[in-house]
Length: 300
Image 1 (cartoon, rainbow, N blue to C red):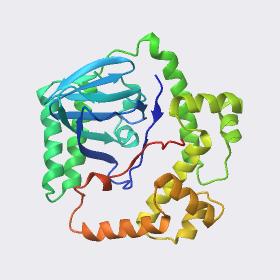
Image 2: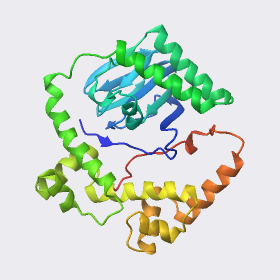
Image 3: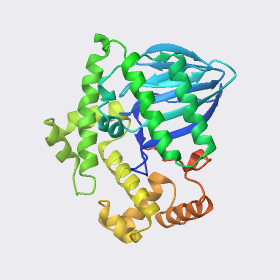
Image 4: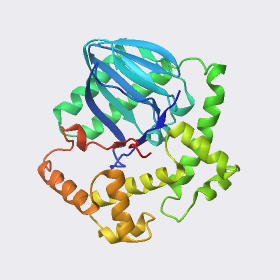
C-alpha cells in the first residue's frame, strides 16, 4: 500500500494534543498515510470504514476507531455524510505516564460504554471552555488512554505485516535523528550513515514509506520548527532562519513559501492577529488554527 508519512506539529509543548471535528462525504478522498502517534476517532454521526494495514473495519455513531502507531490507514464514509471527532495525543506525553502506546496493538474498534463516555466528556470539555480546562482535559485523556491500555489491547501484529513494520522502524529511527539534528547542517548521507545503510537504499526506502525524499522532509521539518518560532514572536525572521538550519534569509523565505504556502512575514502577522482575536479563549474553535497536520504537496 503506497502511503505518506503524516507529520504532527504541536505548537504548545504543555498541551501536546491535536484535536479537531471533521465532516466527510462521499466526495472526500483520504490518502493512505501513517504516523508515530496513536489516533483516536470517535464517530459522532453516520458511519465510517477504516482500512488499517489492508484490513477493513466499520464503526458507527458512538463507536471509537483506534489507529495504531505506524499503522498505514485511511478513512471513508459509508453514510452519505459522516462526522467525527479526532484526538491525537503526543507519543512523548503518553510515554511520560508509562504508556508505551507505540508498542501496543489496540483493538481497531471499541464500543465500550466507559471508553465512549470518556471521549464524550473530552468533546464536551473542548466545547465548554470552563476554568481549568487544560487540567481537566489532560486528566480525562490520560484516564481514556489508561482504560484503552488496560482493556482494549489486541493481539500482536500478524506475520504478514511484520516486514513492513521493520521497515517503518528504520524510517522512525531516521525521522528521530532528523528531528534531533534538523537545526544542524546534516545531509542525506549523514542520515544514511547513522542508520548503517547506503544512501541509495535509504533514499529509496524513505520515499517508499513516506512519499517524501529525505531532503524534502528535512526542509519540511525545519519549516515546521520555524512556524512555531514565528508564532512565539521572540526572534526576528532572520534569526529564526539561522536557528532552524537555513543558511540565509532568502533561501529560508523561498523554502517556507513553497512548503507552507505563505511567507514567513505573513505567517507572523497571521498568528499575531489570531492570537489577539482569541485572547480570551484557551482554545480556538476553527480547526485551521489547531496545530497543523502537514501533508506532502504534489512535489513531495
